[in-house]
Image 1: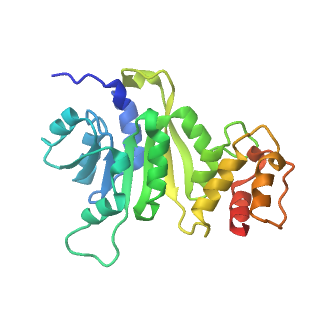
Image 2: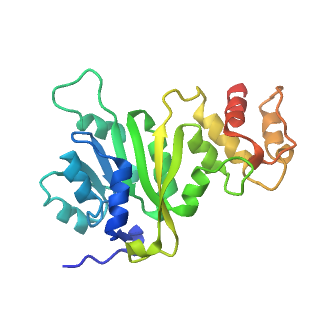
Amino acid sequence: MKHIARKRFGQHFLTDGGIIDAIVDAIDPQAGQPMVEIGPGLAALTQPLVERLGHLTVIELDRDLAVRLREHPHLTVVESDVLKVDFRSLAQQMQPPTGAANAAKIRVVGNLPYNISTPILFHLLDQVDVIEDQHFMLQKEVIDRMVAQPATSDYSRLSVMLQWRYEMSNVLFVPPESFDPPPRVDSAVVRMRPLAQPPDVNVITLETLVQVAFSQRRKILRNTLGKWLEEKNFAGEFDLQRRAEEVPVAEFIGLAQAV
């Protein structure tokens, strides 16, 4: 029985065999690695992944799809909204029973629902300490913002809040006709590797600072961030005669540390 894509779950199922092979090659799964797939859907990526891994854990919200997935002998199915999944707990459950001294970090992959992709990225950012790497298919314009450099139109709050913690690259373009039903946007695949030695910064301070800076991105920072820094009694040096999009990630981090 054919599964009808559900709009409320943002479902677009990948059907292009060539694209699927290219994504799996980019992920490069190795036998025995602990991996989690978010939103496996009709198992287009799931099947080739599990063939290379031997076992795969999947997170699926759609009850009908979860029932189908449970029929696969080499899948562990977590039927849940991914935003409610505790990845630290999941990583612990996925460790080999031998109790190795150094627990393996998990790899996370998925064709993320475009309507909640940003909340998912921030949910994983909060639990990045148990993650080896992430490969996600997303709306191309979201990935453009994720990997954007300063002084470009795509550089944004999302760029700063992910680049302080990940090394990221756009690895593959995916056209709408690769899906059923085809989305109205272009897609792409991003690779996200957590930095081995991220800067020591208070994340809440950085998050607030960046949010204030980009709240009116066309205005110079004196009008937005300047007032916030005054409230914090900041007496250090920082050039406020710029727009937020002109400030490199490292400078935002330095300011957060100074504040």
